[in-house]
Length: 140
Image 1 (cartoon, rainbow, N blue to C red):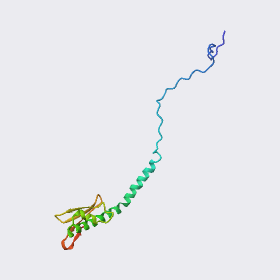
Image 2: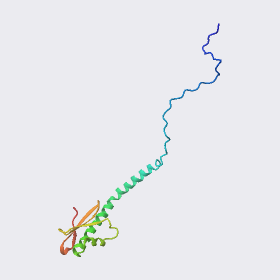
Image 3: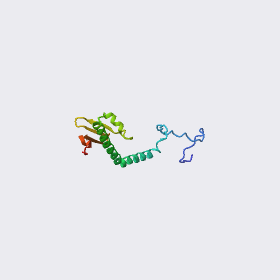
Image 4: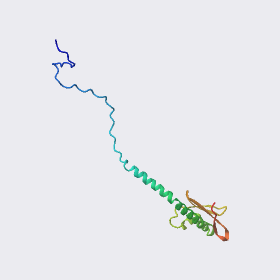
């Protein structure tokens, strides 16, 4: 009789070599990620934008004060030019100081009022008062 063992007998017809490994389930192949060239700059850009907005908010009262002053000056000079000297409103804008390109003039002939304004910041009016010349109207 043949002794009983717990191992499988080897088949003499097959050589001793390892069996091929089963192929693992293949995952979908993802394309390689392109490096993001803004990845390193994005935090700096956000910081710069925040500083710029902070600076504008900090300086806004100064911008508004300059706009208020410029519009009051333009209204007074425009009114004197138009109603004291009798010139056209378009020719009066040539009397402005350099740097006042944003200030525009508008007139109301019925009340003899000229309004100087800086868009979105300030607007002031001056009214012709006869012998007293042109007077700025009080702020509303």
